[in-house]
Amino acid sequence: MTNSDVQHLKQQIQDVLVESGKYDELSNFLRSKLYQVGWTDEINRMTQSIVTNEAKPTFSNVIERIEPKAMDIVPEHIKTEILAKIEEFLKDVVPKEYKST
Image 1: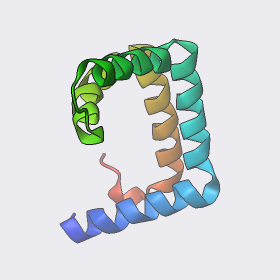
Image 2: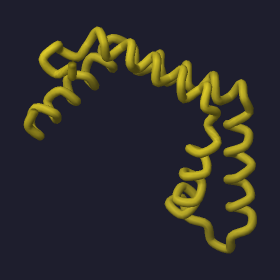
Image 3: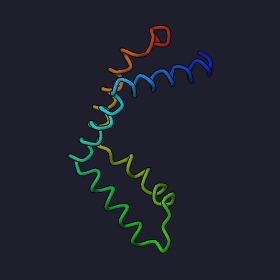
Image 4: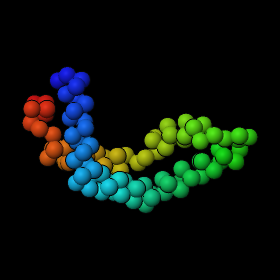
């Protein structure tokens, strides 16, 4: 598969995700799960701490410091659930010629 093929396939998947409403569905699911386990509260606390303790915090600096930690503290069961939902979506969308055997 060429780089062009990959880019074309990615664009097709993105189009179907958005047009079908699946993107919003997955985003809402993830947002809800993260909220339920207190992830969003923890990220808010981490952000507040950085903003409060730095002399001149910038948006990019805060994101740079928070993002790796935020990714690390997503519970494994939530990662597993969202990946399963994405894989299920892709089964119906990705043409057979692009699937590995």
